[in-house]
Length: 387
Ligand code: GLA
Figure 1 (cartoon, rainbow, N blue to C red):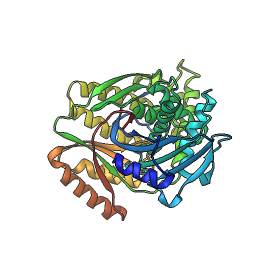
Figure 2 (spheres, rainbow, N blue to C red; figure 1 turned 60 degrees about the vertical axis):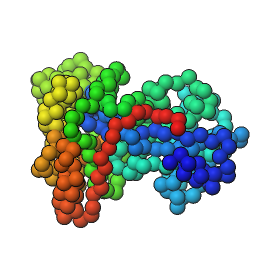
Figure 3 (tube, helix red, strand yellow; figure 1 turned 90 degrees about the horizontal axis):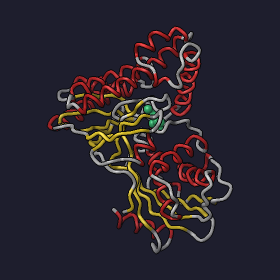
Figure 4 (cartoon, helix red, strand yellow; figure 1 turned 180 degrees about the vertical axis):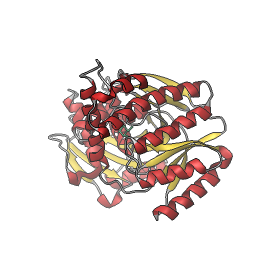
């Protein structure tokens, strides 16, 4: 892989002297969806698939970007000065956003770079290809300039760039899971204060299977921001009757006591999801630590129902895939993962049933939706590295 990437870099940018190869993973969230901007818990893990980057610092201020996933776009150029998001800049808005974010935070990024990327995460699938590029870029800048920033800082800077440069009001989960990834462990993160624990993923004879709906991303980002505002409005109503900073502070019982303070029925359901999903995540991690995989799976299934009925971020593609998964032999749990509105599902499936699972769910999905899904059996890996 390293060889192929360096050869391509040389072909595009001329020579490989001074170039280094970097990697940042993608992530999958096992449970705790749409809780990270509500002060709740999440339970994601980094994957062994992700984004590879070959980078070389330049003497001038020119930025040159090339992606092996979007070869038709050729080399896209920019400058480290006066960075702003532009539609024509396509995917390069992500690395540019991170360079901008470092500058905003007072780090001097004065030189340009040549950067070649190759991602083996399906693009726009909900496995965080964008957060992977963000953390990768921060990791490269830290290496170039020797900035004193931790991996957690890389996550925060990545999120800042996505919020302020790319206009998606995402929470911290994706960048944190990627920057802080640990092989064979998931991260139990409390987004209220960023305290976290690594939990060993002892899935016994089961595998993590990702089902990609292959639905083209549509209004995903604007709907995402809409859900976030709905939760903020529900929180503001609750704050009139109870002293809380976020929805994640409430137990189910407390929510039931105070929910009448929210006048709008839709916002009640949004807040209910945020509160109960947080409680489910806490229970799920406890179940996993006690080796109760069956309960972990059941909570994953409950999470999907809540995301479908109360939070309304699934749609026919994700629902079809998950409902088909629930019927298969050897499935411990299955749910949508990530923001929703298309993207992927995550299922925990007994190892010897995985092939049959992919075949059956794939067949039912194609029959109902009209086009094929894709499946990936994934492994849990580490955070960013230099190869
Ligand atoms: C996206 C966001 C995350 C998180 C999830 C939903 O992946 O980037 O911050 O909110 O959606 O759980």
